[in-house]
Image (tube, rainbow, N blue to C red; front, side, top):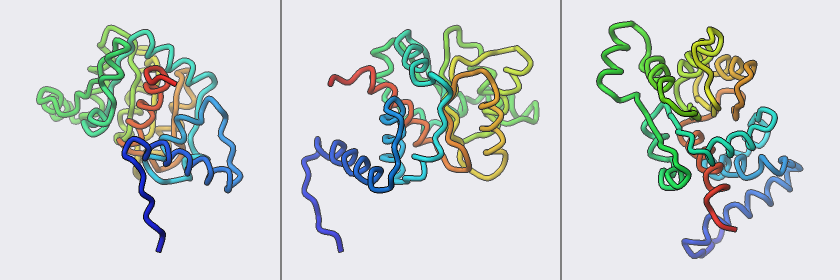
Length: 213
């Protein structure tokens, strides 16, 4: 049995990140410096070191995401769980707002009428926001597929996509399709992900801009 480590509450996160860094070194895994805060926060959220090998970043993705956030971009999620996990105060400091349309009654009604998923209707609604939007998708591959279709038809070009839906149906292909587009992205390849991972990525980006030191 491991010994209990007594750590002050404000030191727990710092100590956790030190442990993650040490374990990555022991495994011989080196994460590019600009990707390190994001990938480490994903590992911190999940306790899963496989993310160190499966997280995928478009060229200059982090730089582009930070620039969008600094200029007040909004964030749209595909679950209220991800919405709850995003540090909205940090986002508001930068002039952005977080949205999730999935539970809206009119979204559900329209999805039923059209025989499509609420994620599809939610993405269409998000496309009407009159400012750059960072999409943080952690649950619904149909959200990514809807965005991909809009990109392909030229009806909408997302500013940025965080694509980490979890599951077994259309999850891997939806991520692969987004990575084939010209939209900057942060995506976790494979089946793993989730709303908590989407929120963690958003927060890592936000903290890099709003935390001192």
